Structure formats: C-alpha cells, structure tokens
Length: 183
Image 1 (tube, rainbow, N blue to C red):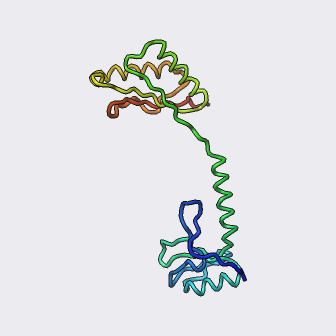
Image 2: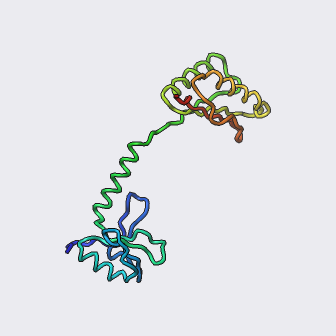
Image 3: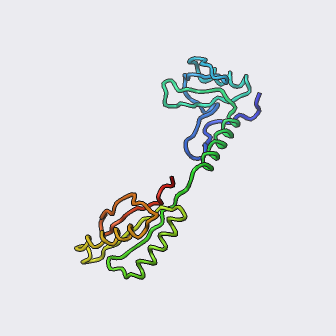
C-alpha cells in the first residue's frame, strides 16, 4: 500500500485540475481499470479501495460525464508522459515573429528604400511583416494615398507575398506580408 496518498486537486501545468484519490467526492462513478477495461458504475469509495489494492491512483478523467468517469492508473507516470508529449510538441513547433514596419503618408524616397531594405531582411529571416500607416489630422481625407504607398511597398519586395490586403482600421491602415513559399 502507498503510505502517502495525494488528495484533492493537483494542477497539470495550469491548464486544468484533475481530481485524484480522496479528492473525488462523487457518490457514483464509472470506473475504467488499469488495463483499460470497463469495470462499471460503482461508488467512489469502492473504486478508491480497488485502486489502493493495486497500489495505484484513482483519477477523474471525464468530470463532465454522467456519472463522471474515473480511471485507475499510476498518476506520477501519467504526468511524466503528459509532460514528455508537451515537450515534444513544443520542440516541433515553429515560431514566426511578426515585425512591424511603419510608414508615413508622405515618406521620402530614401526613407522608403531604407524601410524596404529592412523589410527584405525580415522576410529573408522568415518573419512575417505588418506594414502600417498612421493617419494624423487632415491626412484622413487622403487614405487613397496611403493605399498607394502600401501597394508600392509590396511591389518593392519581390520575395514577399501579401497575406492580407491593406485595410483601414480607425486611423491606421495595415497590410500583412510573409515570405514566398518555397517549392
């Protein structure tokens, strides 16, 4: 028999809490054995006794079911396997950053070329780009000029694709670009 029974709630990485052992307060539960077999509906005390006999834990895996579903398993091993799967999934995911380039309505040629060069570096590094123009005061009457500036910017980047066309949101116009997919 285990000498130190864990009880009530144990958090699993802050996502959700699983009730284990004495923390399961339901009168009746549906029990799944350690081998995956259905053991039927029974009282939580009887299920806990069965788990103790096998020197394992009783874990509530489906609290929303009627009656709740519990399983007999080694909780320490279960948590280890979960953490291992999460770590593997995290290793396989790719992080893409969105870099912002801010333009103005009446941007000078040299400033424009500098921003294009910087955006080209971001694209080459595999990042997405958010190109934005902020309209101030009376510039709101000339949003069509902002649209032309953003289209000219998109044409100046041959290695990029426009994901989201320029769109006016409040006092700013935004366009999203990403690297061309490799074939």
